[in-house]
Image (tube, rainbow, N blue to C red; front, side):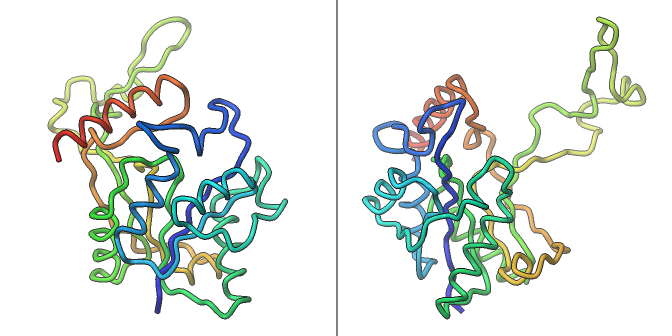
Length: 228
């Protein structure tokens, strides 16, 4: 079966205006996800799900398709990514286009590369997994976290006070860049049982929720490009 790339890009960002098409190191940030998906050669179609004509225009300019606009139901602040993906897959089903595996790419993920997509795709196929998620290890073990109680610092997990950091189990979090999944799980609301990690270097991961994050992401991106 063919494979689909879905880039989810709703308009109306409040913390960073026009976030999904804001200039990032010389081009709209959504362009990085589109170009990586196209360059990978994995996908029969690279599409953008959006409710914004402005985002749609930029997406088409960089080679993505926007075969239909997102519905009102999946465009409000309460819609989940699962809702959006299910709507997209159902719409393609109506057009007699059905997929086994698809990739969801975030529109603000300049660290996504064609190589990462190819390697992650090979993992989901090889392991016959339900999903592959890029993850990064926490730089400091959360088991040694503090909380503030009555104005004072307290260990959240006092049992770990005297444990060495290297003796604590590594904990990972989602990179917020992309993932591969089986379409049947989304369409039928089936819980994933077999998730495979795709470990990413911390220097190629950055949440972008405010202007400071944006600046840090540009610095990290430029460093990644220099290393290549």
